[in-house]
Length: 287
Length: 295
Image 1 (cartoon, rainbow over the protein chains, first blue to last red):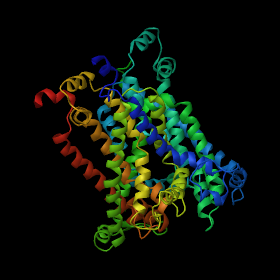
Image 2 (image 1 turned 90 degrees about the vertical axis):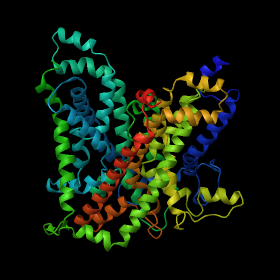
Image 3 (image 1 turned 180 degrees about the vertical axis):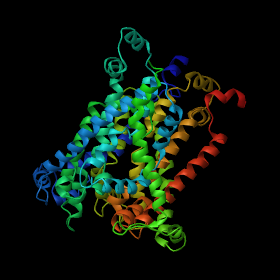
Image 4 (image 1 turned 90 degrees about the horizontal axis):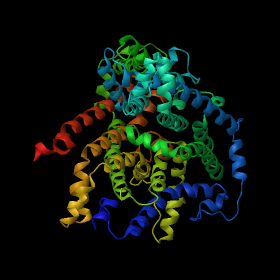
């Protein structure tokens, strides 16, 4: 009996199938909207509003074609390109700045370290909405409005403090033996960072990349405030526009494009799912 | 080398600049702005406490919005955290395929913030949407989710709850640290599973419950995409959360001073609720180290 209890702490004893049933049921209820969304993207407008099942009567790809073309002069190819033009530079500057800062916090001694660390943790709890308006005014003074600079440049200054925290936690768990050996061999701090720390940090860096990719793709309020011209819109804004444009919403088209819009994030999530959930768990802050 | 203070400071410099430029300066500036009247065209005019007086005494929409925000947080935060804890508890039975379920439950919290999901939500709660189709098939009356002020709140609360995954993985990590021997002992004494949950699991992870409650509260008070996209604040302002009101005042009507004052009220609200939680935490949160002394 105790052997069994060891296998399943707090377990229900003999009925694992009962738990499976509960889990499968919850998973189904949670994921059904997404599954249904995919099915609905192939349905006709009429079928969408009458059919509970997700399997379409016949596969119709025309909603994809129409949705992709949009009612504007640009296609979603432009909007996807824009999203990547924001996301990729942002990921690069985030990784560089956050690794540097995390390295300093985890390994170095310097003046004001404790206070700076508390400030970092504190800013994670600061409601961003308080900062939006003054940030807007600053970027306006700089003449950065209607460009991607307000969406990318702050990240170059390690403002996404959640990632610093995550990397610091990860670095604290890595023993310093290798660094000490490399130091004896005459490595300087930057060589050490590049040849020893970065390879060890790889799993955590993958989490940073995945999180930043998905959050930036999802970001809506930032582009909404800073971007004015349609040609610069990322996918999130373009999707919103496709609903707002006409009174009579072409639901089938909107749904098809919603599916396409979710594909990059879902693909990245499943490709890196293991690392990524562990990264979220070890530092576990953002929702 | 690690003792080299200048080198350490050099590496942390981007962060220091970032905090000063993009966090601290805007933070102070928004406080200053909240005492002015500013419309982006004429220079800001100092009006003292006028903005705060107006929102306290002459702004019924603010009162409505404040109530809606509090209601949203009161409903959505416990639902999300409670659900996360319950599912983490079930997943902790070390079943086969736990990785699959973990990923499945985590997925919504990854996608939930996207506009595509908000579109989906608006759509399944539409008049002839999926939810109402299911209700009719079950022989129930369809509900005007988006048009009836008594139900609209639930659409955004459900969207928030649906994204319980990130809180769940944090609970899961905490649960795996609860010693198995405790459950074995309880089993020997004939405690039921439910009793074990309430008297072993919950007390031992109160610090994590506390942490999740605070973080989710901070998120809930800033919820924007859901109300903006799904209900557009309506009907009858029943989902007009403060984040939406701040956005409208600041970026649609360009009452920048008033917007800043509103955002400071939101900040004060979050800060004081956090402070109250920290203060109350000493009565219900306990950390493994102090266990012995408490007995």
